[in-house]
Length: 190
Ligand code: B4P
Image (cartoon, rainbow, N blue to C red; front, side):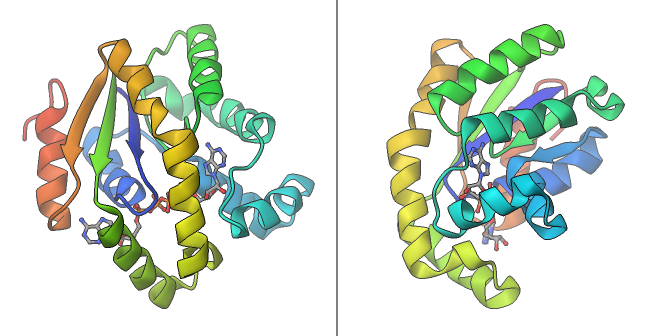
């Protein structure tokens, strides 16, 4: 199964995807994680991405697509994948469709987790305290939510037009949200 997880920062995409990958036995591919790994390794690409991520902006489409392409071409992704954090704008939607057409791996379902902004701010403040991620500071979170509303929100419409979008309530205990996701997936018992 090929799943795209959509939602604002802090809506629970990464959290839910890491649980779902074990259930479905397919890799969780997070562009945020790929970028953070490049930053940590100090690669030229990571050095370029770091300041952009710390400011809450989107890294260039070209850099993210190159990384994603390399990851999706790995053998474990042939059985399917959970894509988290991509696409983040309409240009990335088109690029993903072209890439997946070449790999003969079209998206089966796009799941959007909806969470109100006030709750997102609380969740990310909790993560800032626990993990110290630089882009979880209140000021950067506000910028990430602005970028999301401006550039990423239209991505849901892209999948809706193609009959692939399912919108889910992302508010509640982790387990409750997870059950909603399982119930929305074709051929997976809830
Ligand atoms: P991401 O890594 O995608 O960061 P994120 O949006 O915060 O999502 P994440 O999956 O980590 O968090 P989650 O909601 O699960 O992106 C980081 C940066 O990378 C971007 O700002 C951008 O610069 C760059 N980037 C990534 N992809 C890109 C792309 N395609 N193009 C350009 N740039 C790109 O969890 C958040 C917190 O909420 C956690 O603490 C979790 O425990 C908590 N939580 C989750 N569900 C909960 C629940 N039900 N109840 C209570 N708490 C919950």
